[in-house]
Amino acid sequence: MNERVYIFDTTLRDGEQSPGCSMNFEEKLRMARQLERLQVDVIEAGFPIASEGDFESVKEIAKVIRGCSIAALSRATKGDIARAWEALQFAARPRIHTFIATSDIHLKYKLKKSREQVLDDTVQAVRFAKTLCDDIEFSCEDASRSDIGYICQIVEAAIAEGATVINIPDTVGYAIPEEYGAIIRAIRERVPNIEKAVLSVHCHNDLGLGVANSLAGVMNGARQIECTLNGIGERAGNAALEEVVMALRTRHEKVGLHTNVNAEEIFKSSRLLTSLTGMHIQRNKAIVGDNAFAHEAGIHQDGMLKNAITYEIMTPESVGIKHSTLVLGKHSGRHALKQRFQELGYQLSAEELEAAYAAFTTIADEKKQVFDDDLIAILQNEVSETPETYTLETLQVTSGLNLIATATVALKKGEEVSQDSATGDGPVDAAYHAIERITGIRGELLDYSIKSVSWGHDAIGEVHVKITIDGYVFNGRSASTDVITGSVKAYLNAINHASTARYRKDKPSDVKREGAAV
Image (cartoon, one colour):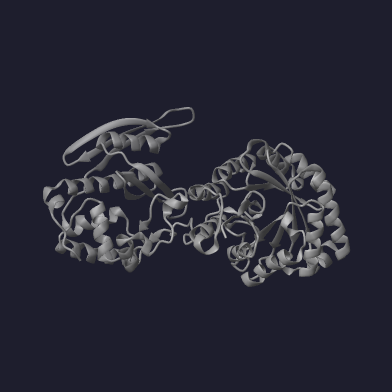
């Protein structure tokens, strides 16, 4: 089997319902544009009847996005459906998505209706929606806790009225894969007109089985997966788009299914969602987490250095990440340490490597991660005697509302003091530019953070910066009651680490020395 699975992204609807994940009009539009670049098949843009803001967002997305179908959710009522169509009518490929609960639990406690009444509501809703739009999706809410015979009856009736997509949600994440797959298989076997519609799965993650259930569904004949970026959504979230897409791609020889998603846009899409919602993902999150392509264990690092396929079942580039990371920590071995020193430009002798490794293990026991500048410091302290290159002599900054920020910096190198001035977006940026003019070293700022380490207006601010120079990462730290001075000293600290690295690499005895195998 080699068939296509359609990806229905509900990040902007079900995902946005996740507490703390609300987006405004502009943010939704920006996210929709990225989903179009990701090449999902359907974007569920919102629930138009829910609010005026939701209506306007769906309406604008329908106007702007031309490469994907645009869906809007509605309850199985004429008012909801009419409002959904009012927002969708401008879409190149509109889809009305209407739903009603089918489990006896929901019928008794929420709808307070009989099965016959719900069946009639289904027929009337789909029939009315079909007069407005050709593409109609119908969902049986709480399907995984519904009677299978009743589901088949409802589905057959919805298709008879013109439904083009039938969605079988595991609304509360109750099913297990074998059970959910059996529901999909039963619908395909028992509904006589099922071939006239695409069967869809929508799985929540309350038991951590959202992706597993989605895969069980498509393995049993469903051809649409409803999912969200980063797995956001109600309660524990939805099946994660990046996980279902890469599972189908990585195990294609097993499942024989594919999607049209541009997987290289996955990481960018994930990070955009994080920045818009502030909903950060755990480091060990599959596919897009910081640790997804990071390796610390010595055995793993050794295998990776020999051939990445030993410990990576997909390449980081395949999801838009530049490269894997060998994280140097307490589990790393000499092989990985030697390799990183070589990447930094240092060829260590066997004796130097042993001395560096002893110091490295001591630091690694105290820190969760050892950075490039820590390695440089090890060389300074254990292998060479290199003093701090630059020290801050004076700093003067000028900034304010409607003023161009200016900084004058004086640095001392040996016995010589050099001074220069620069402008910038703010006083810190201006000071950084001045330092670059004096030292001739330009660092690209990767991360900047400041936090208070004590109480009160005169609290000490601890500043951390991370910069990259020639592809190498250096960290800088400082603490001061003056946050601008602290910021400048932290940046200078990173520049000093970079300067020391250059000093050591420029020494002929260092760059020519061959390291022994370990």
